[in-house]
Image 1 (tube, rainbow, N blue to C red):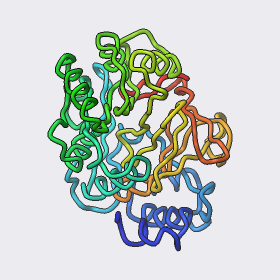
Image 2 (cartoon, rainbow, N blue to C red):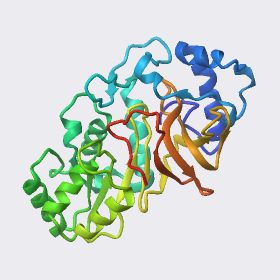
Image 3 (cartoon, rainbow, N blue to C red):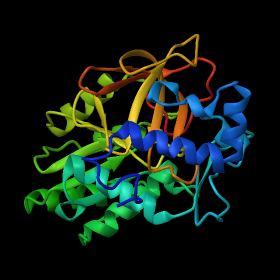
Length: 324
């Protein structure tokens, strides 16, 4: 489990109680977050509900050293950037917290990684250091243990042969891919997939003419004979993930909750409706668990959420999701 009191005894301790406990800890031990809360004029002692919690703008991960406590990081996740752009850095103190959160979330939606061969088509991420998405794939491959696990840059023929081999063996597989690479691969290698889950992670960033998520998914489904394309929602600044098994409707893992803030009043927080996405990530125990993203979204009554685009003022992030 992630940590005593934060992820244990989930049936006895509500998400809200764990979040408030973590808020108090991070207000006390995270100088950047404490200064932000104080600058808002918020009395930390009056924070008693999820809607009361102040959410740190995600841009702070570009401009500040966002850490809770005094330990040195064992791992640094870093976002992509265009020339001259400042990258976000997420300082991970305990890699086991990340691994536990990733595996628990994955198993919640897909079962143990050992059931799958993991194939990663992540060219733009493999070409740089410290990409959290590459680390995610490495961990899943490690716990999968399948001999055909692997990363691919542009070896599409080799990838197609591996997929066809796994299909012939009726071996379940997950093809985790950045969007532009999946589109290129699908164009060159149409096939009929029965045992392979295709999971796109977003990421066009000038590589192709922008397409909506629906357009991308329809094309991939047509090329590969699939009923649905899966998606993963994560970012450099998070240790937890959300997954969509169809239609771009994401559901967060148990350590993650999505809320909405008003477009014009960032302190007006609600648990349903449309606006800008705020995220509580209980796995972010050593950085900041309360993040105001630049993604526009819509939360549904069953807890699922859509990502509708990005705020106009926000610089595009390498793993940003496409406008729906």
